[in-house]
Length: 425
Image 1: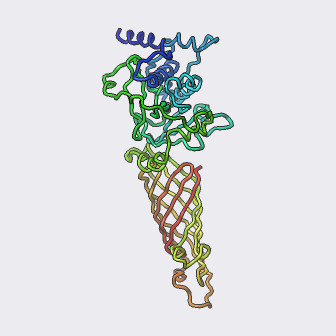
Image 2: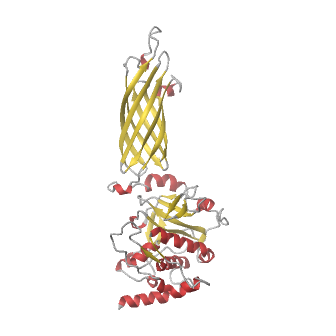
Image 3: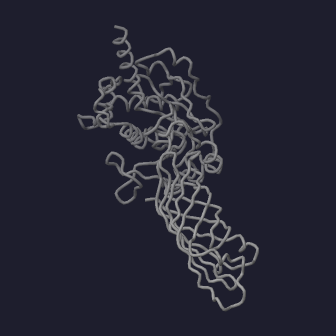
């Protein structure tokens, strides 16, 4: 009986949602994004099968179209139907994004800052969120659920810890006109029976207490959640305030150098005990090795150098690569060449950085003129026809590009440093 009364109450409340005069919470913007979560939840139903877990029953659908039937009827215009969906989190996020896009003027009147609303998503690392928007067949980065999705060229990565340690999930980010970034999760709203939303502070998505008028369920734990922050001073217009080009507006989407530099170092650290938090990256790379003597002016780049071609990357916590190196030492009277197969293995200590050790062997060719002057002992010309190499280094992943740097020793060029650049496959 209590459940039925709650549903009736939500039904009545939802009939008046989206009315600009309705002020049900501390400010119109937090009211609007809770309404957005409920409205999206009402027209959607989560499919466990579509999510790849068909062996489970679908979660309970707390919000249904009937709850806002009058509202949907008005929004449908001349049509006598409303499009609903049976899908997964991305479908909820896309429908919510589309709804804001279609009613952008109204959301701006409620406190949305310019066009700053984005689909937010995470893969395996809950501390790396990617902002994107629906693209087109001629302009997209990936295809999600059959939808063209574009990650802005200027960068959509945000090193923020997702709510609930979410992985493989999608929701929305929106900025209020006082500069606070909010998030709203229509999928979990539908699955739990109350609005799941909050704001972003200190690299965290903090969940806020929902307005009880929007709740079908009201667990006692909700009272422990903080209220959203009070509305502050309105921000000045950004340089892209009048632009509809999302490739430009992303530049004003709350990212500065700390998101990229400090965030990459501190906020992107993952739970080392959970291998699922480590994405897999790999591809082809080329590398160059330069001996230490080159920095002392004792040789030129052409005299002593090594080149490598390999394949490698990071899988789970493991760092690895296999590389074929060509080494050349023509300093002084030397005419040495080597070919080495080198294998590296190591461990990651965060999502983007790994340490490795390596060793390899091969052949060494000495074409030094035997009748010439006494050979340069620095050239290591007396070490036979077997070539070897040992190294230690770091690998950095900035998908789809990765970089490696190392210190090495081989019996053709001696001690040196190496640099590698790769592209993911």
